[in-house]
Structure formats: structure tokens, C-alpha cells
Image 1 (cartoon, rainbow, N blue to C red):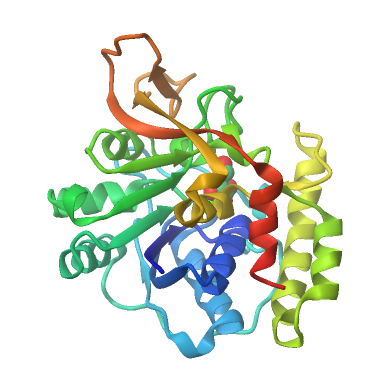
Image 2 (image 1 turned 120 degrees about the vertical axis):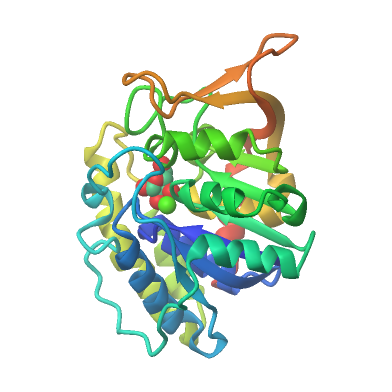
Length: 314
Ligand code: BDR
Ligand code: CA
């Protein structure tokens, strides 16, 4: 299995991604670091611990707190209109018996990468602040990590927090630009593919019928928290009657890469302008002169990806 660390701002779709990672036989989830974004870093750790208690209490996966604000900008509002006040659509999960570890998130990433050179895949689902800080602490990180999969950004699709920016990059553009130019083996899973990969109420109803008894509490959590998410996506300017699996798609891409198509692109993240902050500027000219090369997902077999997601709960 793929040995994985997840970095998350544990809101509703982060929660779905973590649940998928816990149940996929292709993944060995070894740690979770948390960040601000959908909610504050502390809340994101609290949500993560409660989720682990719900879905895998016996595994004692370490949860570490990371950055509480962007590298250089002040922290602006959290996305409570998308994820609810507690980040999980108001669903109150039982408390966890586990505490966060003392080691800060960026240090945990560096230590684990040093102890397991070339072994670990890091999937980021929030601001890129923790990874940017880890790169500062350990300049060898690009060779120590096997691979990084980032949920964030968009090249061809419109943005979701501004006309051109996706939330995770917009929330800390300087961190994103550093991460994208660090020479990591990096795959970007952005709105180009995540907005098309959607879960519906009927998917959940079907899961409720198919899932074994032991998994039913997890399905109930998904149904209840997704109600909030469905509501946002219906009333936002996406007008959808379904919810995009942003963060789950990044985890799926890490273990089922064949479900997506990729294109190498030279990119920078805009940190200069106020209108375009957090925009992925891809140099698509025949001979690119701006930015560093990363791999950008440009197409997804969305039905198969959603099917993969659902299948681990059946
Ligand atoms: C991303 O922003 C967050 O709200 C979601 O959890 C996801 O990581 C989508 O733009
Ligand atoms: Ca997220």
C-alpha cells in the first residue's frame, strides 16, 4: 500500500477524504497534520481526532497541529458558510480519547520523511502553509518525499473564491508559490477535475443499503454533514444538486492515478495582485519561460472516480 501523510483543514470534504484513506486497502495512513482554512487549526485537529475515533479508534494515527495563519498575510475569514461553524456541517461527533501529538505538523512531516526516505506520499487538502514551512526546515524534502499530491488551484475552470483563484491557494498564495517551485514531484488536483467529480444524495442512499452494519455510523456521518455541503452548493453560484469531492479526489489520484489525465505545466502562483492573488499562472507557450514544472490533472473519469470512492464503504 501507499504510505501516506495527509495535511488537512478538516472540513466536510476533507473528512470524506480521510474516511476514504482509512478504508482503502491501497493506503496506509501514517499521520495527519492540520492547518487553518475551512476552520481554525485547533478545530481542524479536533475534527480529525473525532473522525478517527469514529472510523478507526484502534489505529491511533498521530494528529499534529500545524500553522495557524498564512506565511506573510493576515488570516482572513474561515469558510464557515461552506462547512458550518464547526467545519463538519454542525454534526457533533463524540469526543476522542486521543490527544494531538506535541510535535508541530511541519516538523512531523520533516521527521517522518527523514526516517523513511523515498517512501511517503503527502496529500495536501488545505492551505500549503505546513508544507512551505516544512520545506524551510528541511531543504532536502523534495528528495525525501516520494510524491506530493495537492488538492488546490485551477487552470482552465473558474475559481471558487475569486474569478481566478481556488480556496486553498488563495488562502496562502506565498506558501503555494514556494511549494510549486520547490522541485517536489508534485501533482495538482484542481477545480478543473474536482468540480466534475460529484457525490449525490442517491449515491448516499445506495451506500446506506450496501454498507455493512459496522460502517453505518460512518455513512450516517457522511449523510448528515453532506446535507450542509449540498445546501451550500445548491445556493452558491455553482447551482449544483450534488457536491464536488475536492479533497477525496486528491487521495484517489494518489492511489488510482489512471483515473485522471495529466499535463506537465510550468506554473507560478500569483502573489502580487489583489485581483488575481492565488491564481495559478500556467505558461502554456511552446517554450515556457515562467515557473517550474509540475503535473496538472486536466481530465478525470469522474464516474469511475466516484465509484472508487463509494466502493471502500460497501
Ligand atoms: C478546497 O477548499 C476547501 O474548502 C475544501 O475543503 C477543499 O480543500 C476546495 O476549493
Ligand atoms: Ca480542504
